[in-house]
Length: 205
Image (tube, rainbow, N blue to C red; front, top):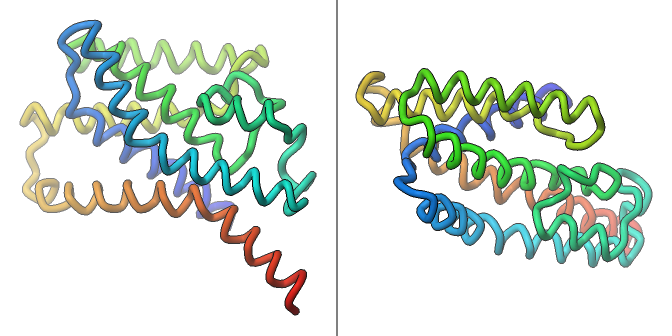
């Protein structure tokens, strides 16, 4: 199961990078417009899941199992997508949302400054090693998946530029979109589902 989870993380960030590659910000204002659109798309479902998770913890479901220091500050940090910068206030099932928001913003900035795929790739690798350095210093964490996000965005850029034009990609693309959207929803609510199952087992069996 651990191996399947690791593969799922790789695929999720790869697909997310592939899909965002269609965006090419033309100015600094457009970076924030696209970023705002991503937050609007990602946020509501995430905030609902986070609220339900907090409710479960108020019933002592999973308290102390995965999550330490669970309090209102923890909820606020996660709701603002900042838990990659505060590893002591992390809700493990939701770490990827903060990472996804960070990766999206970094992509938009790098894509604005580097239109050429080669320079984009070089600059992205530079940011990746910067992330690793910050993670080793304990300043930031959970950013290893950035390499998969960038790999997906590079493939998407080649596809969008008609450099990579396999016919199969055209038929697979809608499928990739569907998998990406549904996997996000399923992963967000899996802790809540297991928490509800534990409540049923605890009180009704």
